[in-house]
Image 1 (spheres, helix red, strand yellow):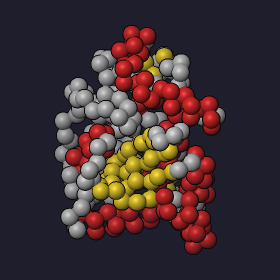
Image 2: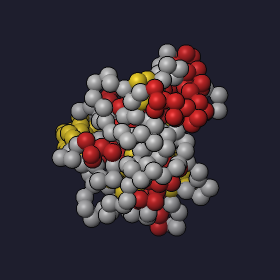
Image 3: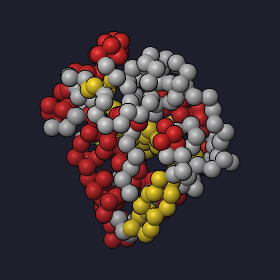
Image 4: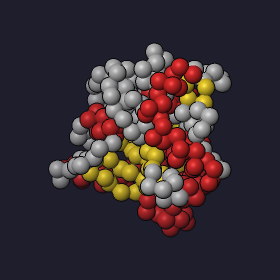
Amino acid sequence: MPPPTTRSLKSCNNPSCSDFGVVHRGDSLLKCGGCKTATYCNKDCQRAHWSVHKQFCKVWAQTAAANGEGVRDIKKKMNEFMWLVRGCPDYTDVLFQRYISMLREGSSGCVEFLFETFEELDEAIRVLKSLPVIGEDVFRASPHSPDHLEHPNGIRITLRNRTAKRERMFVKAVDEKMAFVGSEGETRPNLLNMLSIVDGNEKMMVLCVTQRLEGTFTTHSYEFLFKDLSWYPENASPPSRLAIEGPDDSRPVRRKISFDMD
């Protein structure tokens, strides 16, 4: 099954808007004419958010010009990659074994996949899709995840397993891009908010995908990964919901958490 669309790609990106984080159907949102990625209810919302967005608009536009794909399309691929990793239970078991060992050694942090080029991300997705399908299940997001609000009864996910035949290819395209990143010295506000929700819980962790853009810029996407595939009530109690102002900022405005715009 296809992954759910990243919430920030179909909602107003202006955190002061009453519809911030509210999903819009169809083509009702206004896209930034420069980067073709940031979306707004109207021109007023776009102007209100410009002081923040201008830091990213130019590099996002340069990325689109250089690679033929906008950051919006790249974000969708990053989301697809995380969805495919979620649907590979034998690999997530390995990730949790390493993660729990890290926690018990007194460390905290997330699992991060870093792609230096867009071709690397494309290859990782291709390899994950090539793994043999072993079945389907229903994924249920946690109450403090944006996906839960859209799919309260869950969404079907295709399950795949690694094989000895594809192991070398898998390691090169996927596993070698992975590292455990400690929280010490971390400044990414969206990641810090998610780590505070996990708070040492051994049944859930933060999954991060980082993609290099033009120059020294990167873009990040985040999700919660669960040891038992889905969130269950014993995993955590829902925290109060805060909003992230947009790309790389963190002013709380007492609404939902947006996980993917650092």
